[in-house]
Length: 151
Image (cartoon, rainbow, N blue to C red; front, side):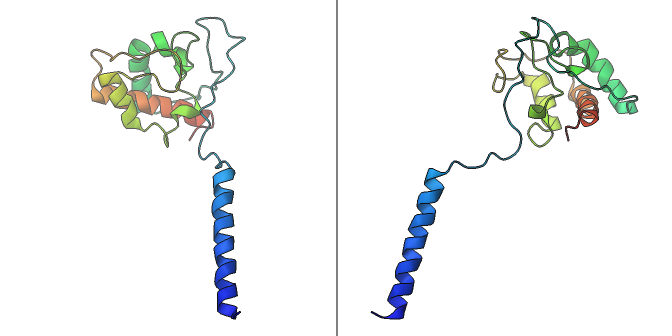
């Protein structure tokens, strides 16, 4: 038997073994977990997330906070902490910029959102909120997120 045939045979066996290993071993989870927080101790309508509010906000985030309070807080709670049984917290790793871009806020306000991470039902479109308003809201939420270690 020549050495080339042995080498090719070993390479073939190693390749098949590596392929089989990939099929049997589950892939590592990349990015953030979509696991929802334990809400068993939270009363209906209570805050889902416990957050740190930054000592100060940029001018744009201050404007976003005013828009948020007028249009979003009734569902997403004061400072975007969510409300059990009503709407999710936006200060949560699910909404980190790498998964939900700032444009996701604009699209959500303009078109609404079909429920996909949480079991709160679909979010309706928000009448009267402009694209610019939603961008300011995103700036506010991003500053809250950064103050809570979500980048």
